[in-house]
Picture 1 (spheres, one colour):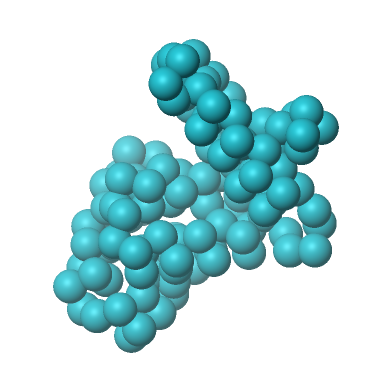
Picture 2: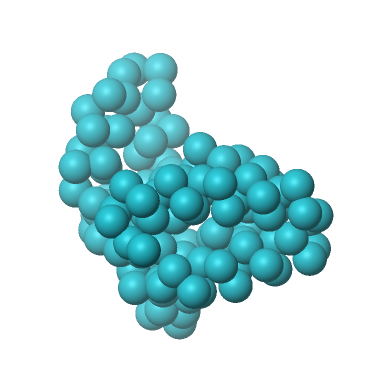
Amino acid sequence: MDNMFEIGLERRQSTLGDEYVEKNLAAADDFTRPFQEAMTAWCWGFGWGDDAIDAKTRSMMNLAMIGALGKMREWETHCHGALNNGVTKEEIRAVIHVVGIYCGVPQALECFRVARGVLEERGID
């Protein structure tokens, strides 16, 4: 499990940024720390820890799935991560189109609203 945590920590930092990950781990207390550690090992170590799918593709998959779930705070976080993993503005748009087709126009509009904020924050036209 320790090895999976270390692999996960590296992948998580690579995608979401050192500052974001360090802030989340530092904010963990006795109540939330076990989940933070398990999520880092399981999601990022097991889920992202192999090279079968590249990080860019995984990020696009995450945007589609999290968008389908309507979890917009997480979608915003993973939109930043997707950009860090080389996903382009045009690819984000295409992912949102898929969300709109399979999950409905209102959900696509939410994704576009959040993506626009992320792109503006990052200075991407």
